Length: 439
Ligand SMILES: NC(=O)c1ccc[n+]([C@@H]2O[C@H](COP(=O)([O-])OP(=O)(O)OC[C@H]3O[C@@H](n4cnc5c(N)ncnc54)[C@H](O)[C@@H]3O)[C@@H](O)[C@H]2O)c1
Ligand SMILES: [Zn+2]
Image (tube, rainbow, N blue to C red; front, side, top):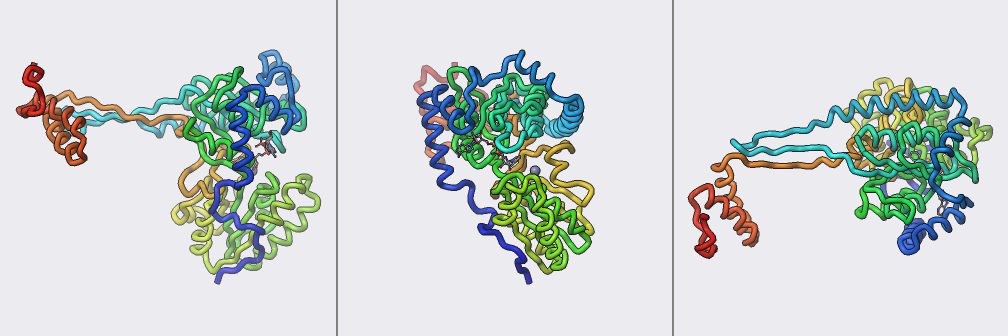
């Protein structure tokens, strides 16, 4: 039997995308910026971030000054992580084949991957300087071959986030703006008097940022719905309850709205994890986020066996799923809904977030039911092309096209087929004025 040792105030199981009050607020800001451009952007930045610089875009001199302030070790570590992210992104790119096949004699069908011309990267920074997001969005776009990559990040409590700017620059951003939230997303998407618009936006963010991207989708492309972080751990009796507790809190600290869920086959482990969490929380420097996150969105479920654990985990479609069991790789076969899977105690969500090289921009609030996370492929348009070099093949296709289109009552379409069937074959064109046929 499945039962809960701890329930959330509101379950995070995949149900909704965004909350109605956030939707309304974001819609109003988008409409205002659409109408008044830069002036509205400035007002939003002043209101939400108390940030009113002369220009939001950093000049080359400003970037150089900022880089000089960043400690060497931080730069070295940024470079190490960017190498890992770039390395994996390049391997993923290699896995995307361009093909051209001959499906009938003389009928050539092909597939190509074309990078978008301009991409915007949102690097979050309201609570923490999330420099790792710069690697994930900017560098991945560059690895995909996007010619223009622009990036926004907010000031943090009125300060320039030096390390984030360094990461954005080293990742290869062509333009860097100190601008946050909805105003940043809308500026990049629609363009203003001072920012040229992009074709596609990527990057994680809080509920406002994620909702702004969602509302703008269609007018521009977006990577995916990547809102407040979630973690779900599947553990059996072999898991170390202290490690499980530490790992749950590692993600709860993202924000008070971050769900942390444990599904375990061992009631004893579940109880022990709850105790460890309660012992760790009071001294956690980021307790202001982690404590309400655990209180309101923390869940612990005890299930009869691992198959039930995987089944229940799939209903959450959580952004991060950690498997701490005797045979963690089993989850690769048994689970289908997750943004990223972390197999065994040797790795953890924090490695994925910060250092290991897989992309950390991942689907939240159930979006893992229909998409994976950000990767080079998201910046590429997979397009097709075709050519028919054999007249017999064209005539044969023309005959089928004529019939197929008439079933759909498309006389115009049918005639494009008829023309070829007549020109390259033996068909007649009863609908054509005589003078125009068979020139
Ligand atoms: N899904 C993923 O892949 C992923 C990865 C990393 C981080 N995250 C998430 O990114 C988020 C980062 O959030 P954050 O808030 O620290 O930074 P953020 O940069 O996403 O948002 C900060 C901005 O929000 C705007 N804002 C704040 N309150 C507002 C309000 N009441 N109305 C309108 N705008 C408002 C401000 O303009 C501010 O600049 C976290 O929730 C974290 O979990 C998700
Ligand atoms: Zn995290």
